[in-house]
Image 1: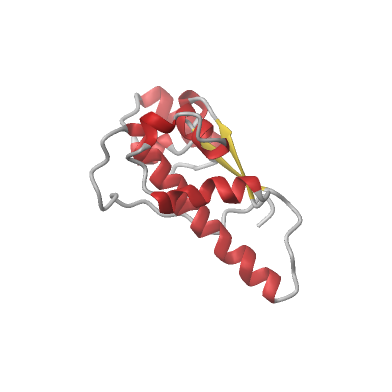
Image 2 (image 1 turned 90 degrees about the horizontal axis):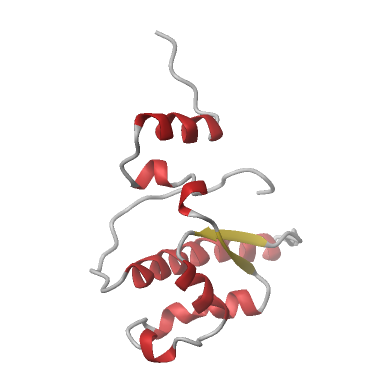
Length: 132
C-alpha cells in the first residue's frame, strides 16, 4: 500500500513454458490477479485506491503484449485467460512498465549474481547484514 510491500511470493510455475515471454506473461498474470484482489476488497470497504499500480517487467515482449496483440501469429500459444492482463491495463487498474534486467531488484531472488552485484542489490533493498 503506497510505498509499502504487502505481498511477495516465489514459486515454480506449474507448467513448462515454450518461451521466456510465455513464462514472464504467466508471472505478470499471476501478479495482476494478486493485485486485483486487495483493490476489490478496499473498494468493498469503501476505501478506494486512487494510485495506479505499476508492475515492472524485464521482458519487452510481455510489455508489448499487455498493450496490444500486434504479435498475433507468434502469440497463439499464450492462453486466452492470461489476456485479462491487457484488459486490466486497458481499464487503468494496472500499468505494466519495462525495466532493464540490470535494474530488476527481484533478480536477487531468482538469478545467480556475482558477489558485488548481490551486495549492490542488497543495499538497494536496504537489507543489512546480521551483526555477529
